[in-house]
Amino acid sequence: MRVTFLAALGAALLAVLPLGSAAAVAQGDADRVGYMLGLDDVETDLALISAMVMPGADLRFAVDADGQADSGALRRDGGDWVWRAPSSPGVSRITFINGGQARDILVFVLTPFENGRQSELNGYRIGAYSPDPHRGLDVYRPPEGFIEVTRDMRDLYVSPNFQLWQFLCKQQPDHDTAYLLIRPSMLAKLESVLDAVQGAGHDVPTLTVMSGFRTPWYNASIGNRTTSSRHLFGGAADVFVDADGNGWMDDLNGDGRIDIGDARMLAGWAEDISESTGNRYWPAGGLGIYSANSVRGPFVHIDARGYRARW
Image (tube, rainbow, N blue to C red):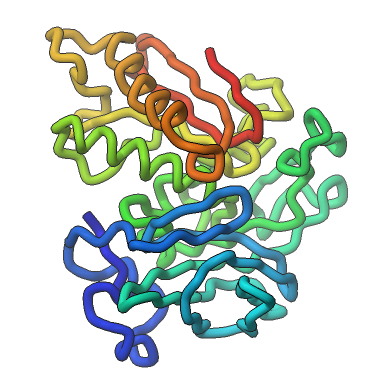
């Protein structure tokens, strides 16, 4: 499992290691730390998590730890920490340390986007979001900006075992700069499912993300008419387990077949987590099971939509 560079090398190296060092260290067992951090709609013990914020906006962390940031302004506010983002888009690193255990938060300062007035960013097609949030929920409001992903950023780890490229929309693959959204609640759920998969004896370093973020333009181009898919907001992933690297789901239940039974097993592990933890640890969301077709194997959809859904 992947560790942050601070857990591996010590807090003294913070000032000399460049941004991204958290994604470039040896394997280890420190994916999680011994204290919790509250961020957006999730509480997590992950040693590395990512978040998004608009330029110049504040991001609040509920955590009992010492903190430092490589840019922006980090200050205490009661029992929390508040970080004010720089005025320009980019990536910043915030580190919290408690009892010698360090955790990193990669914060993506978003490139602004005006829904309804813009349809693309630097030639990358976005499309348009519905101006009316689904069920009136804030998580369905049109995004005000997107993470700008240059080619040299794609291998960046956004949580201990997931990289940025895994969530990119499958459009314009040759475009130098891509844009996406990715939410900490989704990362926390995927890491918990991966823990369950590994705990069941399946030797995989990550889950295969068949579909992560989708722009409204791409979603429409593949014939999907919904305007409320969590994929559009960076809060969903279609995943499967692929230890042998053949691009298909593994035989998880050991019956000698690759079919919907394997997707049911993967979904069952996710459901067990949902039933045994509170919503701060497993944010309420959707869980869907899909059978194979002629072009892909079975998979499971996992999202953090703010309310329970099953199919």
